[in-house]
Image 1 (tube, one colour):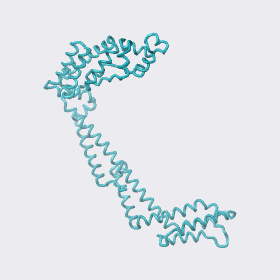
Image 2 (cartoon, rainbow, N blue to C red; image 1 turned 120 degrees about the vertical axis):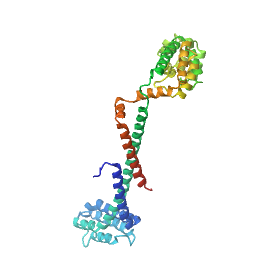
Image 3 (cartoon, rainbow, N blue to C red; image 1 turned 60 degrees about the vertical axis):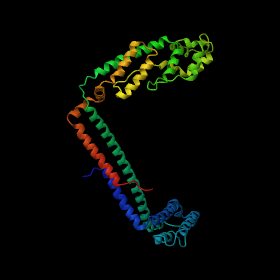
Image 4 (cartoon, rainbow, N blue to C red; image 1 turned 90 degrees about the vertical axis):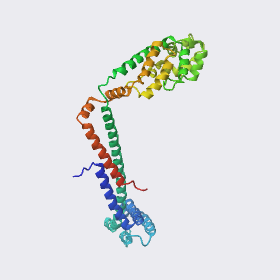
Length: 378
């Protein structure tokens, strides 16, 4: 029994319905159907708008307006239009004799006479609906295929992580990294506390030559102001505090409050949130080639504010990338951080591999179905 929610089955059903309607339309001719459908809708629209008036004995003007518009519609039709007799019969039913009043039965007879053209219009609508349904079903199948591909990729990543040596001594690289991170964080905090704002911005300017460090670049107006103003000799914390002062209070601490607010005000957040984060090494660490180049830059940058012991710890982290077992230890670290207990359990009992095969096969089935049912030409 087929699953009505199965994207493949839905696409196949939509394709079959589209094929069926396309053949029915082709037997008649698309342009022929469109001409008939347009004429039918024009007549039906008049009936819908005027039925109440043309069956009202006291509304002669309504009947006259209706007849004029109906005549205009019918005279515009080609003499050999499909089901021409249906339009003639409908017109006869809507033409009064000695009176100027139609009955509801006259209108019903006219609508009954239009049944053949109504069926043609319905066929055209059904064909257009089948095309829309086909597009929607194909879109849903493509979305489902993308979901399956994403799941396959995720499962392949889990399997790849599961291949790591989870018993590897990752502390051999973790401890030197944590030791460096602690040291550089303390050193940078001390630097921000002791150095003048001018010196800090000069340091940030120098650090822009080391893109792998990713410290924020100092805004030029702020750097120029602190280079010239005497308040530039104060620590950053003082500038951040001053930035909260009113203009009148600030006047007691800086020579030109307006210049201070213009230069420092917009950059208060940058100064207040400056931290050692860009100088630290993430865990798990990057692959050897990436970490090696970054540590070379960090050694140079950290040496501008930290003591030799901190710089030595940076060199130690850099040297980790030269270890023969670095990749194995890093892979183990990544796996330990990324794999959940449930994923490990599923790996051990083979459930990941089983699901991977199932999802991959399902994705291929959907892809094949999509190839079998291409997009519509507009």
